[in-house]
Image 1 (cartoon, rainbow, N blue to C red):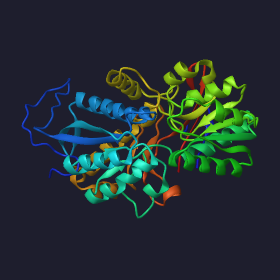
Image 2 (cartoon, helix red, strand yellow):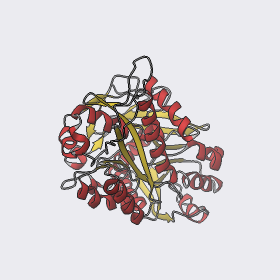
Image 3 (cartoon, helix red, strand yellow):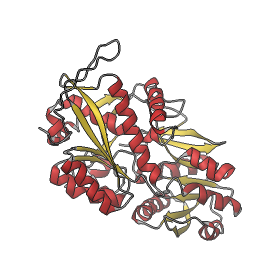
Image 4 (spheres, one colour):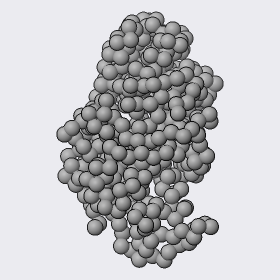
Amino acid sequence: MMEATRRRLLKGAGALAVAGVMAAAVGLGATGAAFAEGKTLKIGQLGVMSGAEASWGLVNKYAAQATADMWNAKGGVDIGGEKYKIEIVSVDDRNDPKLTVSGAERLMGQEGIRYVIGSNTDVTATSIRPIAEKYNAMYFPYASSRSLYTKPAENAVMGMVASYQVAPAILKLLKAERGVQKVAFVARNDSDGLSNRDDAVKAAKDLGLDVVSADATYEANATDFFPVMSNVVATAPDLIFLPASAPSNTPLLMRAARELGYAGLFASDSGQDIKVINEMAGDAGNGLVSIGGASADAIRSEYMDEFIKAYTKVAGEWNDEAGTKVYALEVILATLQATGPAAIDDTNVFKAAIPGFSMKNPFLKEDSKLTFTGEADYGQKRQIGVPLVLTETKDGQFTTLAIGQVD
């Protein structure tokens, strides 16, 4: 699954609604590029933007808006010889499937949007499927449930590296390079947390690791993690794995374990926020291995630097997790450019282009390709081929451990 090397780089109104509003063409930059009259390309963004998991959806929103701003500053995106201004339409589902359904109906039905980024959990992403199929819309979840991407499902494309792809990579690396032998798992007590835990436990056992604890759970709204961590620390693990841990929960879990005397490593298969870790865990936040993105100094391109500036302008501050969420809109736009305007209203054209699509990865220094992948896990290409970057928290920063690729 992962070919990783340590500290080394691997080489009509429907769909995207086209507004008919007449507008004066705006000349931009030395190129003199201008928006075509009234052409607006609407992209939906649906996810959790309040509560414990709010960071996940907000990063999606800010990343999409930053990318849109970058393209709009250049005159828009050229599809079939015409320039389209990009408009992001966002809906907060609060990680509630009922709100996800109503949000998807609004975006795909009322707004006529055919390409939606999100949502952020298995339960909410699954609730979108019947609406996406009803309107033949494409959506790009940050959720790992295999059923979303395996036939007969065909309208979802995973926007990240899946938890069951991340966990084996982390565990293999830490066994080989840090001597980890004993692993404990502490999962959030919901479908995402428990499913991710089960996948990670299987990966650990497949690697011959000793699973000393796998039953410890906590509620998503918990604030006191000492009771659960007390039992886990007592099993003397080398590594405490936190499946699907939200950025607001992770530092509290780590701090509780450290204050109970735990001196080993932590790991998570989900993206984290270094600012939250520093503020809530301080020095106790060192030693967390998790999934990273394209924002590490050693690997990022000048275009990634531009994105970081645009994201910071939109969000008010940089969040390293945006390095994992930067890909979705760029890939959507590049695929539309490759297919031409027919895919704007007809996602069947977009789907037909997926197997052969390839573009240069604009976010990495090295010359590498960005494609759709996922055949090994889903039997079809329904995943953006985001590089698998592993990072570790050290002295208040994310440091890059390994970079690989998912088949």
